Length: 218
View (cartoon, rainbow, N blue to C red):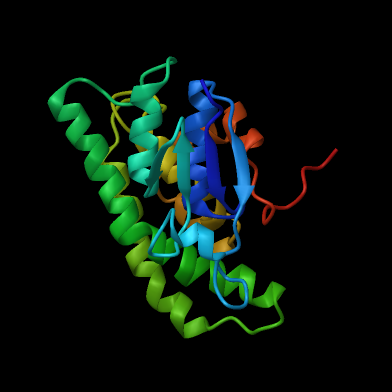
C-alpha cells in the first residue's frame, strides 16, 4: 500500500490537525510543502487537488481528498490503530459539536484575531491592532466557555477519551497560548487547563511541532 501524501505547510493549523491524526494512528506519511501565499498563488497542479487553493490536500493509493475534517475522518476509518471517533451517537455528536465550534468560531478568534495580531504581525515588523485584539477577546472567551461546558471527564474533551475533537483543538490552542491573553484566559477555565496539560504532553504534539513555535529549550 502506498504511503499517504499530505500537501500543505507545517505552520498551518489545519495541516497540523491532519498530521496529528496520522501520528496518533501510527500512519507513516510524506508532507509535501505547498505555499498558498506565494506570489501568483499556489502551483497550478495543486489547484487540481484543491480547487479553493486552501491546505491541506491528501492522497492515498490514488484516492484524493481535501478538507481537514474529511481527511481526519478518512484516516481514522481507513487505517488500523486506536479509534478516534466514539461509536455512541450522543458522544459522537458532542465530538462533532466541539469540532464545529472550533471551525466556526474559535479558529478565527483565537488564531487570526489574537495570535496573528499579537505575535505574527510584530514578528513581521507590523504593529498589533490593539482594538482588534480587545474586540476578539470576548469572542475567544465564549469559545473557551463553550468547550469547557461540553467537556466530559478529564483529561480529554469527549468522554475521557482522545478523539478528533482534541486533535482539532490542539493546533488552535498552541497558537492562542503563545499570547499573554491566551495564557491568562485559559487559567479561567480549570477544566480546559487540565485538558491542555494532557494534550501538550502527547508525543504527537512534539512530532508535529510548528515552525512558528518557540524552540524547545535544552
